Amino acid sequence: MSTPNQNHSILELRVALTTGDYERSVKFYCGGLGIEPSAIWNNNGGRALILDMGKATLEIFDEIQAETIDQIEAEQRISGQIRFALQVPDLKSAMERLLNHGATLVHPPIITPWGDYNVRLQDPDGMQITLFQAPDKNEQGK
Image (cartoon, rainbow, N blue to C red; front, side, top):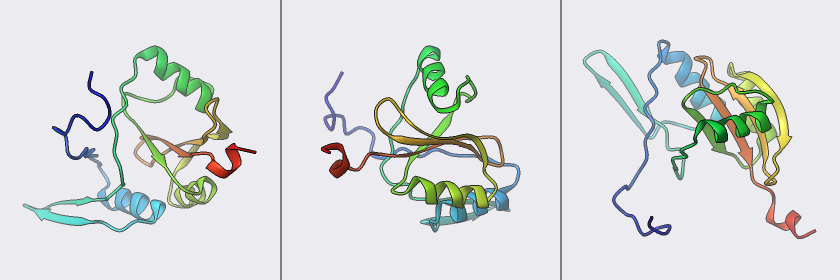
């Protein structure tokens, strides 16, 4: 395996989310996350947009690890094959915005064993979303 930042064959990760209700999903993600599209396409009657979500990573879990994370965040095995995990600067505000834009609370916020503040939500199409706030580095030393 290569060490971090050695493998430059991938320059960007994009997740393509297909939805039956485009307008609802745009409102949910743009309004709920408080971000504007960085690009919009209209092709052959179809619509698409890109939301710049900052740094992207791909986590690959086996079933045991997925079960462990779901138990920590939701107290039961609940997520599907794909789950979004979005780091936010203020978990409470981000959670409230998404709930106001149609998210369903799967499990209330918790502090994980590794110190993050996490909440599990579900988007209107059923996609599981973990919002997480890393501990304040100033607070860790106290």
